Length: 108
Image 1: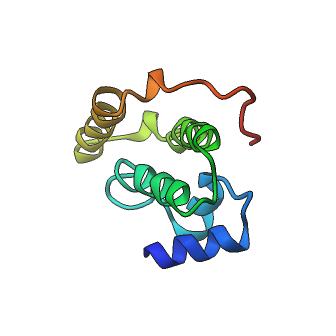
Image 2: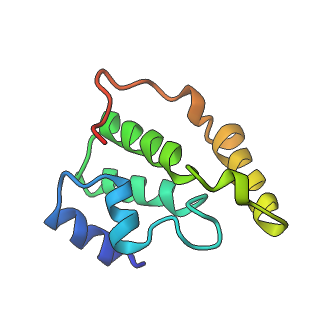
């Protein structure tokens, strides 16, 4: 997925969630399973003015919450290692658990 693909889709669908982008552009479906691109996509959307900080935080939380539903029980081998790295990135480096909570949750 290129930056232009992301910005074009955000322009077409200003209310799109990161999960919508995942379904249409395969955001978070590569080897890192969103470990890197979800943060980058959120930053691009914020930089482009498509979303504000509060919505960015809510969308990122929702994306991370939904990304692994149903996958944890079937992870095996290298997938477990990559998942542990992703968790370390989000919890240790970005401290996602302690981002400010939006006044209202982002709609599913």
